[in-house]
Image 1 (cartoon, rainbow, N blue to C red):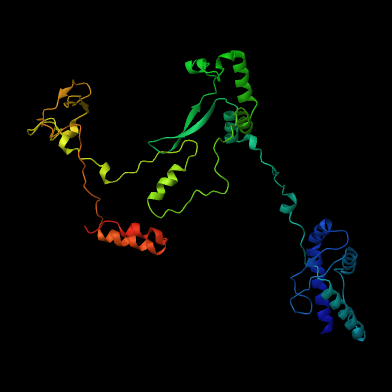
Image 2: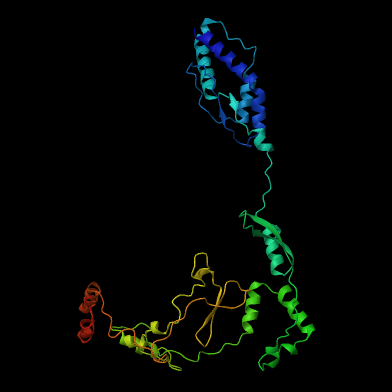
Length: 365
């Protein structure tokens, strides 16, 4: 039945073109002048159910519209079956080649969507924090923040503007020959204040203050090539290190031994400084003030507003001459054996000349 298949294919193609005419015209008006992409999911006449997306030209579409007459009736003459078959094959090839089902025009929402203008650069001068910093730099009043000690939260605090202080009235400046505060008049002070806080930023102020400072060269400099760190192998070398630390006015070092410690127990006049002996009397921690008199007596106060009272303790007499104080120790105190053992270990890295000092340390307690 080639004639019937040919008529069905032609009728299907005409109906498809009639239904999609408006969409094609709408798509062509928004496409480029030469080409447009067309895709069609409608099954072709061959029955495969797929159409390959092809490029559709306006001239080709006009030809299709002219040839697709709805009153087309195929010839019923059997003698023309061969020509009808050829015509059917031509129509079938045209239908398979041109399958304009749908045109994908640009969506209207994409065309009508207006882009929001964007600020390429931020205006930092309009920020509140930047404005407060500028007011603070210019010495003007502004609203700052301060952390509350109780709630541990920041709260607003009004900062006052910079105000010019009173002139210097120090007696030391009046007597000094290096300070001339009294020679600066009020007009000069006001001009300096306005110039400093109104026309300078923080960097310029630091430079301005640094320019008013006189730099004095160092009076004492260390010898080039000398090192602060030195090797010390025994305590006597600390004396040399201390005396050579300052050349202009060297430090004075006093070497002491066990004879330097005195016994002051024989000079005690009081066994205790507690202001009382019975239960309920004040304790030592209740004393607020103590006063030592030349005759050896003590006076105390339990309150700062009280009068001085003599310490109610029995005095004892000093043994021997008060001007002579005996020594507390008769010889060098020995160290523990474990400590002496530890001090023998550094001898492995110390020069041999210093070994006798560590060997002669008293020990055995």
